[in-house]
Image 1 (cartoon, helix red, strand yellow):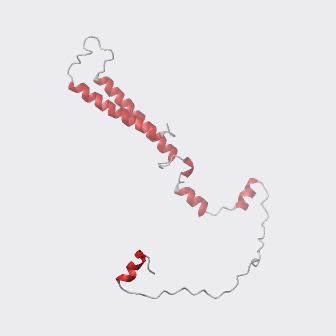
Image 2 (cartoon, one colour; image 1 turned 90 degrees about the vertical axis):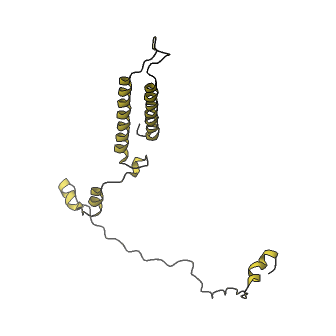
Image 3 (cartoon, rainbow, N blue to C red; image 1 turned 180 degrees about the vertical axis):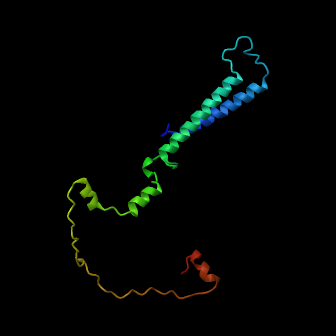
Length: 155
């Protein structure tokens, strides 16, 4: 039900609507003329109450399972679950002494490697300095004719 949450929720809502319609239909008729002699499938108000409690309990169970699985996220993907603030603080702001941890575990601490600084190599392609190409300047015209002259093919 967790991966099919939308379908399950839709079924629960439809069942609730049908149950409401059945209650209203049964309340209109004081006596059922079709099944008054020998009812094929009698429905009493206690049956409807029991069915309503089962439907509401199932709906609540589905919603709780989905929330527990997803952490309240809209997406059904569990990998996008946002970790609580505790994990963010523990991983990003608390320094862990790995040497001490290795020592307590009975293992030799790893030797510290000195980082080698790489010298940036020159690019094989050197940029050639060129003068800027001047932009062509169009003579400024004014008036309505300059706005409309392109419509009839004039330049």
